[in-house]
Image (cartoon, rainbow, N blue to C red; front, top):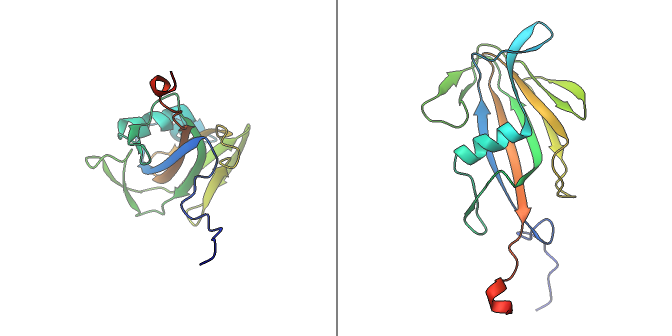
Length: 162
C-alpha cells in the first residue's frame, strides 16, 4: 500500500483550532441607518458575543469560544421576503422576512447584499482577524451569518515539561 497525501480533515493551519457556527439576524427595532433605511449594525465583536451566548464550542477539544478568540471568516446570506429564521439562533425568536435588505462594510467600503446571493470575507488562510468592520440588516429582513472562529492550539501540558 502506498502513502496518501490526502488533506481531508487536516487543520487549515498548524497551531490553530477553528470551528464555525451560523445563526440568523432578524432585527425589528434597530436604529442604525443606511441611506433612508433603518436596521441594526453588528460589529465582529457583537457577532462573536452572539456565538458565545449560543454556547459555541471548538469541537476538537470541546472548549468554549470566548472573547479572546478571533473571527477569521464571515459569510452573510440574505433571505428573500417570506424567508424564515430564528433571530440570533434562539428557538423562541422565530421571524419571517418582510423586507430583504442588508449590507456589510469591509475595510471602510460598504457593499449591498441581494437575496439571491451572499458575501464572504475569508482571511482563514492567514488566520488573522476578519477585515469586516460591520454587517447591517434592515429591520424586517433576515440574514444568515456564518462565522469561523479560531484560537491558538493548546500547547503541551506545562506540568509534564517540568
